[in-house]
Each structure stands twice: as C-alpha cells, then as structure tokens.
View 1 (cartoon, rainbow, N blue to C red):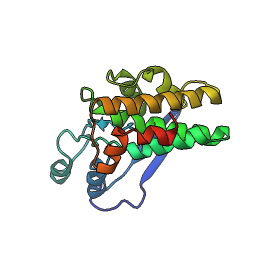
View 2 (spheres, one colour):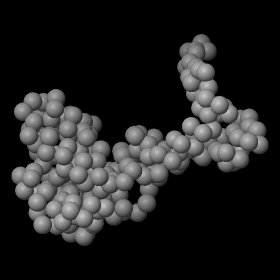
View 3 (cartoon, helix red, strand yellow):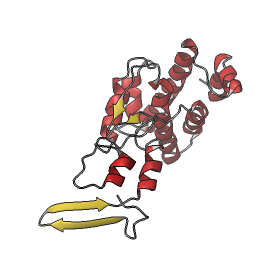
View 4 (cartoon, rainbow, N blue to C red):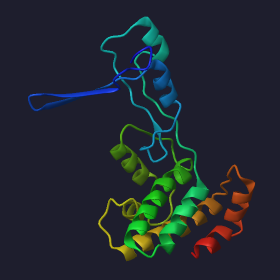
Amino acid sequence: MTLGEPRIPYQTWFVAELHVSVGFKSTDRLRALRSEPASWSLGFAVENPGVWLWSTAAAVHALGDPPGFAHPPDPPELEDFVEACAKALRAQESLPLRVAARAAGADAPPLVRDLNAPLHVRSPVDAVRAALSLSVVPSGWTEDLPVVLGLTPAGDDQVRGAVERLARGMLGLLREQRVEFEQPELTRYLHDGTLERHLGV
C-alpha cells in the first residue's frame, strides 16, 4: 500500500522455482476497491482478511487491523439475467450460445442469494461452491448451473436445455417468493408472465 499512486503497480520475479508476485495500490484505490463488488464472486459478499507484515499508523487507520479486503455483494440484476437467457436461447451458433449461457449463469446466484442464509466467499472456487450450496434455488440448480457456467462438459443442446430450465425455474421461484425489484415495471413483468413469454419458456 502506498500513499500516492504507485509508479509500478505490479512486480513479478522467480526465486528458483518459486513464483513471487507483489502488487502496489494507493490507500485511496484500496478503499475504492473495497466499496465495489468483486467481479469474480458470483454476486456474493467477499471477506478476505489480510495480515500486516509492516505498517504505519496512517496505513492501519486507513485499512484497519488486521487489514480486511472485503467487497459488498453485487445487487441482483433480473433484466440482465433475462437478456442473457434470451441471447442463449436464440443463438444459432455454439460460441454465442455458450458466451450468453455463461453470462446467465453468473447473473443467476445474486437473484436467489438473499432467499438463503448469508454467505461470504474468498476466491472464485469458493464462490462456485457457495452458489452450488444454496438450498432455495430453482429445480435442477446443482446440475444446470455448472453447465451454463461452462464448468461441466456439455453439448450445445445440453447447454440450451440447461439455460431454458434455469430461466423457467428462476422466474417461477422469484414469483413464488414474491421477490420485488427496484424497477416496478420489471416486478410487474415478472409476476404477470411477460418475462416467460419473452423467453418462450
């Protein structure tokens, strides 16, 4: 951590076979990063404790003791999920199908996260495990989520089928749980079946 913006943000070297990588960020940048959701966390809050090897009073004041590297959860984005599902279901080629399916998979956990007990994650692997451990989820969740995320080998028809089941199950569950969203129109479209008709599911 530096007081100002570092001239060199990263440094990498090898000690024999040991790979060493060190990053440098200003206190302002670290505080800003901790206020943003982590891009890899599948919408979960991140709690990643650190350890001071050396510190100043100003550094401890800025980041705490021990220095935690927390990130808030990502808000649920129903519109993004539906858009990604629509792109996947209408794709005529494998690549756009799988890119859209992966986006739908990443947008799915935040939609059901708050229907379950709170969880914090520390790594991308931890985030996938947390998503698969959720209990209030659409039917087939533990089979379909790895497929749409591209973590399980599957043919195009299997990916498309997983997206369709995930979309249908997710919309039904959110309606059953009477989930509301910041956009009143989006909540109305969820509850009156407009989103299913849009997706053809």
